[in-house]
Image 1: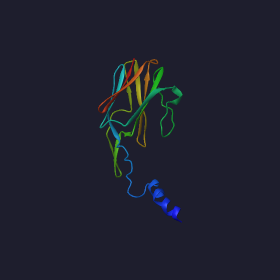
Image 2: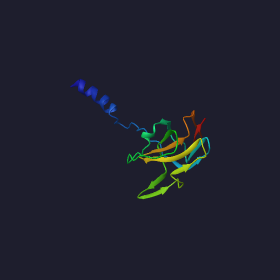
Image 3: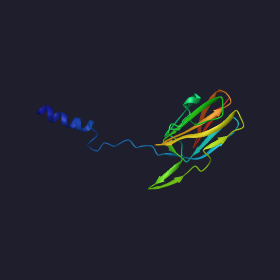
Image 4: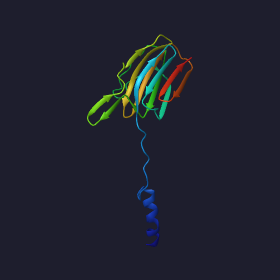
Length: 151
């Protein structure tokens, strides 16, 4: 019985009881703009996204995150970028207020040919970029702007 009583406070502490603080969930970064130039695509947010992942993907993997529907995109090579936690609209109760009101598909003069939104679900915001051919890719963050540069 003495061992059980001695182990109980340890079990309670490990279970997260006793006033332990929870980790806070990072707030969404809300997209406000997308700018396409010949060799870059910039995404502007209300605040910097906590996580940015970008990389080349085969054409067969270009799909919408919710439906799985194929996303046609011009180009010979394709980069998919995901921002988390991020969204293009704020939800206030039952009201959805868009923070990005631009097009879901933008053209570029080359080597960036076309950019399309592929995901905006559960704090995952994704875009695909079609380029003429596979080029060196760099991702930079400057405050609330994330830029993909090609070449």
